Length: 99
Image (cartoon, rainbow, N blue to C red; front, side):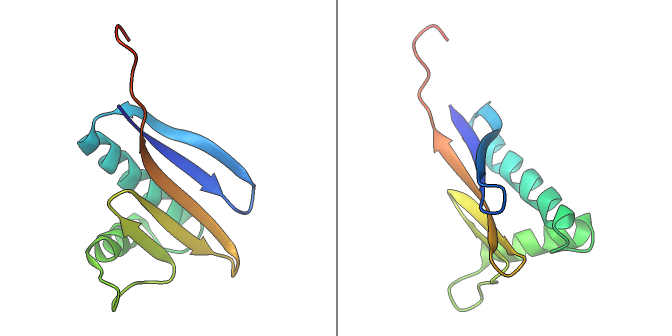
C-alpha cells in the first residue's frame, strides 16, 4: 500500500497526507494536495493555474524545470518564501497479512 507524506521546512514537521492507497490513487492524492497547496502558499493564483503549473512540472525535462515546483514519479516539491520548501513523497509501506 502507498502513502503520501509531506514534510515542511518552515514548520519543521512531517505528516501522512493520504493512505493507504494503490499506486494510481496515491498519485492523484499527491496531485490534489500539491495543487491545493500551491494556491495556499500564493505560488499559484487559483486552482486552474495550480493545475496547469503541476501538469507543466510533471512533463518538464531538465531544460524546462520550474524552480517553484518540481514533480517526479515519486514525489513533488514546492519552493516558496525564498528559503522554504514543502515536499511530498509517495512511499510504499507493506501491509501485514490480514490487514
